[in-house]
Amino acid sequence: MAEFRLLSRLLQTQPGNTLLDVGCGTGWFTRRFAEEGLLVTGLDPNPDWLAFARAKGPPEIRWIAGDARALSFPDRSFDQVVSVAALCFVEDERRAVAEIVRVARRRFVIGWLNRASLLYRQKGQGGGSGAYHGAHWHRPNELLDFFSGLPVRRLAVHSAIFLPAGDGMARTLEHLLPHTLPWGGLVVISGETE
Image 1 (cartoon, one colour):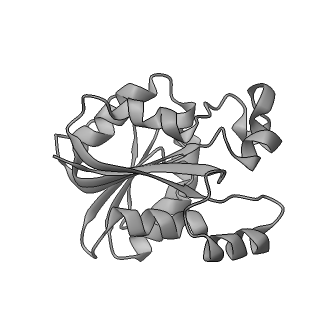
Image 2 (cartoon, rainbow, N blue to C red):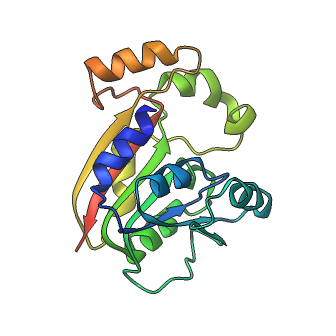
């Protein structure tokens, strides 16, 4: 999956690193990171999704109920912190971003739904449909404002394509134009903490 390859590359993880997945949902990305040899914690406010994630395993992953706007960890607790299309459903995204930066020791990668994407035209207009109902969609240039005044450096904007009906086409486009498509469904901000 293009999104996971992008996230993994941007996080610059090494086996044994600690990683927090904020808004892990049912744990798809969380499990992939654990398979890479990371010590992973998945956090989500939904107990049903956490129960599903826990049942899928593996047992080494720590699953915690929590709020992205008030993470219950000390400063700089994790080598890397990731959040994939979860903050789009959080009121006060800026506060959640500040919390992610606070608990990250080295790097963070946060993905949002891209308002400039083909996906938005298909699923996001008019308040969103299906799993996207109520989501906040942002244009890439808006997202950097969330980091204003935070102790971060080397912020970069990336994109991963998402074409629901064309996975083969998405793979081809990602191969030809890796992470440069401004209309990819997932727009990602990566950076380092100071």
